[in-house]
Length: 263
Image 1 (cartoon, rainbow, N blue to C red):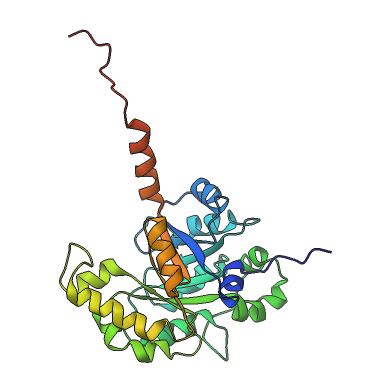
Image 2 (cartoon, rainbow, N blue to C red):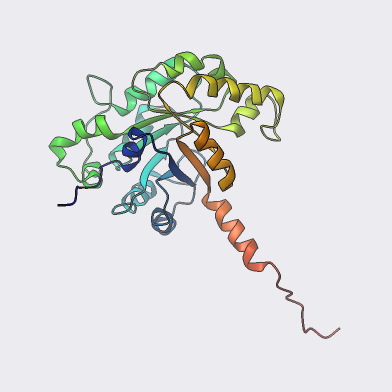
């Protein structure tokens, strides 16, 4: 008899030391999620921080991953329990916390995703239990085991406290975010600056051997492969908007719409 698929397939991959390939979804679209969840990605990064996604849309998008190998993770707008709770109760299999600057903030993030006595999450997962495929009475134990807690390392303050952040009990992963990290160092044109590169190197030197899953952005397959070989386990391969833009531009390449028009 075939074994049942894992409840959180991304956690299963990480526990096995395997990498997970993901894509950021900022469009409030069930249809986009249905396509991407079947495209071969291991996880979807549902962006409630920068995307125009409300909780009703997030719930529908999470539900649209049912029956696929893609785990739905949600980036909440801020590290506040009242923002985390409805995303988890909608069935998110992980929460991505933006702008974690200190170990204290990382501990608060962990507390928001765990039930008492480990944390402070309130109980009401009526839809989450359905998405997880478990009885409501079993959900709390399952969720405390399966839900992922991820911190975005995207500010220079986090680099200064990176050793303490990495040591926070219950934190599962840290994602190094180059765009906001660069902004925190005063650069608006990307991460190709010595101080930003030193900051990323410092974060890697602590996080990669820490036992936490380390994540980052790779906008082409070669970069993704290099990151995996260096020990990264959570790779964001791109954005839904970027994929659409690229496909639209490719569809227009080489077409002379004025061919045959009389001069």
